[in-house]
Length: 308
Image 1: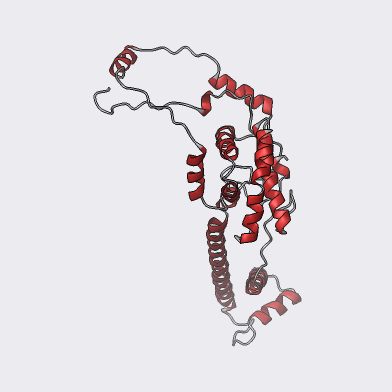
Image 2: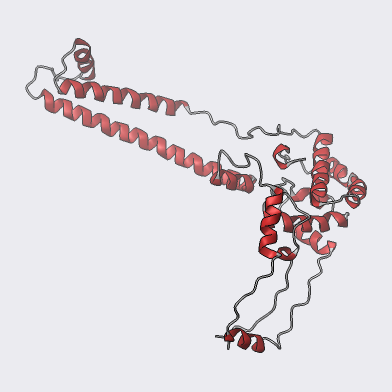
């Protein structure tokens, strides 16, 4: 199943019934994983098994391709403040054109309503100063109302980000980077990606080695290379056991919870390691045709003193 067509796997309750359903898939997964031909098929098997569990237990699955975020309702007090700001701006415009000499009946009527309840008359000699004071007062009110809305918006944004960080960090990071176009559009071409990485890691390159390279080589001749690390299913099971249940590092949408439930299948964990290496190294669909050189290496311990 392509990544863009996959529904987002929900969290399921940690009940005995759900655990029993997950454990029941262990023998079935072993059969299918042993017959898988590449990493794409293996990943589809794991995701399909998780999707089957969700459907068996009756978990609600979001529709693929639809946005999962719901629009937030605007509070009534915010709408009221926005209406006040709109009316104040309109009144400022009317007072400004009256101060500039526009004496149309509609403008005069609006100005009289603005000074209703005060002892100010439009025939006073200092009416221009009173208009200026009234305009300044309205501008200060608009600034105060706008600041109140900004404080609310900033506080709501921090609150929603903190709550999303606790529940789904992956979706939070996506919203921070590209809130609207994240995950949209076609992916990179597979042939171009393979050719790009082959050009980086599979082509021989001749470097110009200076005299200092011979000095470093002679000094490090006595350094023994690190013993190759063999990753066993038990090692992976121990690492995954300490991982958060509902975190998914890659783009495949598979949580650690499902791997914990299928820990009896060693094939699952070994394939999971190989998938993560190649998937995270390319940021595209797993490619079996990639050269293994960028995915494996040996570290050599080297002294930090005595080398220029």
